[in-house]
Amino acid sequence: MSALVPLIVTLPLLGAGIALIFGRRRRMQVAISIVTLTLVFVIASVLLVTVDGGSPIAVSVGGWPIPFGIVLYVDRLAALLVAVSSLVLLAVLLFSVGQGAADGDHDTPVSIFHPTYLILATGIFTAFIAGDLFNLYVGFEILLVASYVLITLGSTESRIRAGVIYIVVSLVSSILFLAAIAAIYGALGTVNMAHIAERMVELPQETQLVLHLLLVIAFGIKAAMFPVSFWLPDSYPTAPAPVTAVFAGLLTKVGVYALIRTETQLFADNDINLVLMIVALATMIVGILGAVAQAEMKRILSFTLVSHVGYMIFGLAIGTPAAIGATIYYTVHHIIVQTTLFLAVGLIERRAGSTSILRVRGLMRAAPIIAVLYFIPAINLGGLPPFSGFIGKYALFDAAASVGTPIMIVLIVGGIVTSLLTLYALMRAWALSFWREDDEGAEPDVRISYLDSAPAAGEQSERRVIPRIMTTATAGMVGATLLLTVAAGPLYAVCDRIGAALLEPVLLVHVDEEATP
Image 1: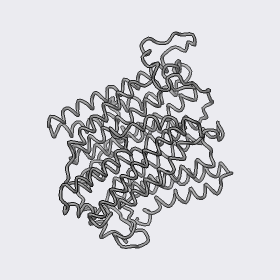
Image 2: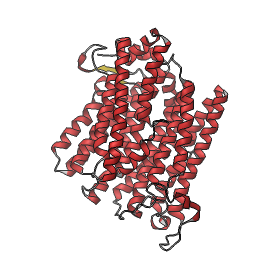
Image 3: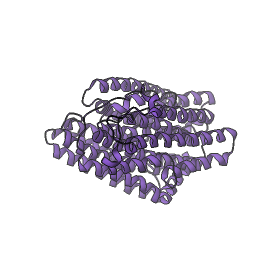
Image 4: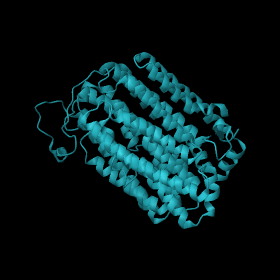
């Protein structure tokens, strides 16, 4: 099975090169992208079954001995996230194919989009299976370079402005990450994660703390963790709908993934859990208050994205195997549900010509299918039972209650308040956009007049036809959100095993030394 591991990276990279060659043949590019991501999904699924029933797989690229070679490492966590990410990337790709067929190359130039999209996938997959910090850095840079192109597609003024903010913040994060790598190599003589976990205990606690905080800040920026989350709500909503959906679902989760590795394996003996608890609470509350104050749906979802990253930091701060398992489950849930919501809002924008809840109205009668496609993931993200959002939050709260300290109780209350406000913000948007009568001459609603000055509150664009493939791709993602609930038992069991294994760094060292060819 070790021969399959490099294919996770090489297939999308090769696909990007071939798609670039066929830049003038749209159908060929589409076929290459679909086949590539499907193959990665199949490989990741096979590897997930393999490592779940056995041991993790580590491959030293080119046969170079550790720590000199690039190590690709696949355990349950890496395989699960690659499988979920490839599925999401495939669904968003199908959505973008429909948009491109209907609109041409105005919003998402196809000749550029497909190679860049596959390079973005390469960076995401590389980050998930990196066995050393420098290769993780390379994965981050690959996906960031691709995201720079995708976020500015169409070259409108708003997209260029948002792209500049995104680039500057990302560069700051990358510089901090690179500085942390240099400091760790200077202190330990290695950047291999297994060796770092083994040697970190030899350093004084003060040195560990400095290295620890450097990585947490760098990854926290990428994960949009408070107080370094200010860049996200202004960057994501300006991009084309497919780009916004994949950014919201995956890019912040790469930062969360890096934080999971950092907290559970690299610095298991250097405790900053109290700091993480405070940050988690602030991320949840500040993010959701921002969402409540918005009138534009993509901005509402961007702020809820920030707030729900707080739940993942919350699970990491608890630090028990049960909490880590719940964090993994909630991460998978959020990748799928958040992506689905952005796709549904993309459909609303095409049907109504706007995503402002002050302008959109009467869609229940005009577009009942879109109403359902938005409603199901919205109540899921809000945490209503029996959906996966409720399951993940309940598991996090249960893990916190088992610790039982006062700050855990405060975090549980904060999490409940965040969940209720999430439901309020999303259901307010649904009620106003779908249930409110479509009366062009109606006076502004007094109940939401306080949102008149909210960013993008009055934006209006042209209404566009919705190709069937866009609705089908969104419906497929809604089905995936329901599958998270139907298959919650087996999936949560896998996440539980991941949580237990991540707190055993000795296993990682053993696999790196014995299983590498």
